[in-house]
Length: 397
Image 1 (cartoon, one colour):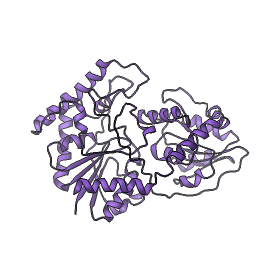
Image 2 (tube, rainbow, N blue to C red):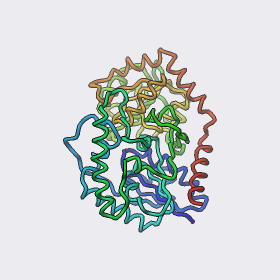
Image 3 (cartoon, helix red, strand yellow):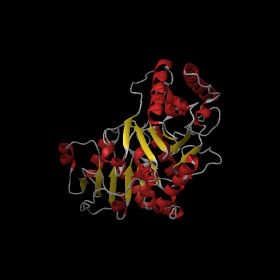
């Protein structure tokens, strides 16, 4: 029986784990032992299928790094914020990951936004793979590319940002007696790059020769609350707190004629009750996306991969209010597809009613979303999961 370690180190939300659990369940059914080392253990036992697996706390960076240039423009600049400018700290995290490897003895490492897990794996004799939507698996070029193609980023900044990371990482590798990195792309020299995204949503438009597996959605489930009664179209909202534009969005929707069904984790019972109006209902529990997509006219969300994919595969246009760089790049891809509208995280305010009217009055947005759904109609979850599991089995053979 092979041992597979899934590592989630950076990034927020349980979309990371949800996107691998169906694969883990299939691997377990084939006799493999799957163990999870994750950033956040708070609610994992409530995730569909999670109770079947063992979970450990991943070594994660918790301090806030200040004084760095804004906005972030490349993957190395993300690493600047997670210990890659601090040799002592990075050495500690690297040793912690290696201690986990000694404890678990994996045959295969699945790294989901886990660069330090990959760094710590250098020189060790097990297979390794990147897994995720592409944001944290940059193209293997030097220097690693800009994440903001619309900005004119000087090459010198890209080079300097990467060199700062390399200097710290190589100091750590030298301390533990592992060959140094010649460039940061070598950190991602894995045996398989599971790009769990369609090409249209890849955060790097410059990627060449990639194999896109497609998105594994979380297991079906959730509540099916009734829609509120209202004269206008039905709109589903999934947003998280805190969010810069959330209060303004909710106030505008509550005073509209749209029939709005929402799920907003982080609100207290009192907050939910205060927000309820005849046309605006908030479900305290996650809502079954297949259920809402059957009758919604549009979806408003932060461009998280799971919710967005559910909406697009149902042919629904989306209004996207991203909260971070990863979500913003996803949202811009959707806008460039013509299947939705995106609001920049830096925007001081949002006129959600005007944007919704534009989204619903112009049939082109719905047409583009339906075209996307038709293109990927035969990309079933069964096929995607089988392809990933078969490749994992080949790596373990």
